[in-house]
Image 1 (tube, one colour):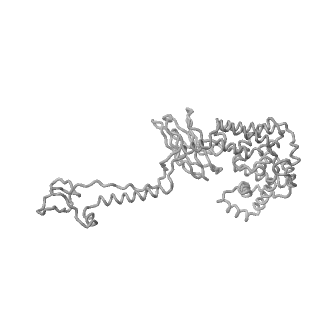
Image 2 (image 1 turned 90 degrees about the vertical axis):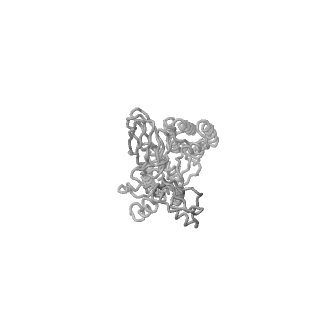
Image 3 (image 1 turned 135 degrees about the vertical axis):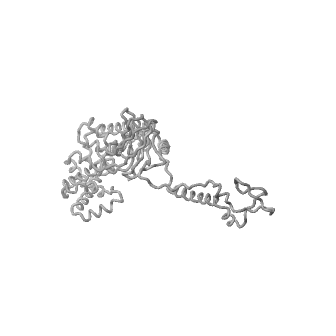
Length: 447
């Protein structure tokens, strides 16, 4: 098997614990955990996640989303189902307001999935990738769930437009536009559509109001002593089971594709042009050489300028003058043929690869729909290898290819790195045959 993907460093893990401990605590308290149960859930789920990062790092597609998901599963198993009484007195990071009371009452009337989606995205400010992992769906689907939940929530608080069923495809975009999560290159087109669309305009406005109300919810924080104890234990476990930031950086450098900077090709072409010009100049005839130098080349008595089948007859003058050079045409001097500049061909070929020795890809990164060359070595000859392009969450995207290893166990094929969800970041390319041999490497989608 190839080496597992570079994982999370101990320092990064502890930073996540520090940043999200209170929000995970607030979430499990809402599921019916007492203060003591919530402290146990937060710590157990955090330390369990560190261990999973050590033994099965590929299972953790998003660290924050995975922690919330694990904590919720554990809380539902150990929680007493009690109402958190201390929420009533507004004990949290942000003190209660009238909006806070109305928002909590409206959340209590929503369905469980809508309630969780709004807490994760708007109250705890998790990105859509983390929200999707916690809910068990891709980010685009999570954005659609959040969009509909916002509208239902706002109808419970006050007025809100009806669910725009005929604009279902735009809901994900509207949700991300409302909270500033839409990629900058898509904002202009989305805002232009919203300005002209009588349905989407009020919907985006309503979503912004819902997010304003939800983002001000008071978060029930851990006790200071409990939080300090959690961070101390999480730091000790992380330092024992996870690599340091320096080790992760070193591993990433080893796995970094050996790409050349953009200016390299231009410099190489210029150098090649100068070299070619020098070769052509030196391989030209002697007349042109002498014309440039201003003097005729001379040779020692009896010396022939070039080896010829017949000796050159010496002239009476002391210094032999060089005659025309038919001998050069009679005996051609090998010339250097310049290598033509490569032109694109329909089948992509790449010079640099990344991955294990058994499975390599090139390029190692690119936008959605990049054609990737896959090269395998050491596979069972004559047994077809199936290659799959996986989503950022580790599920098949439907993009598939195959290769037939030759007698030396080598194959070359291509696959299109296309994720229908359009999620940037690392995506696995997995290869397997019927004998159980499996390999994988990572393609990084840039957009």
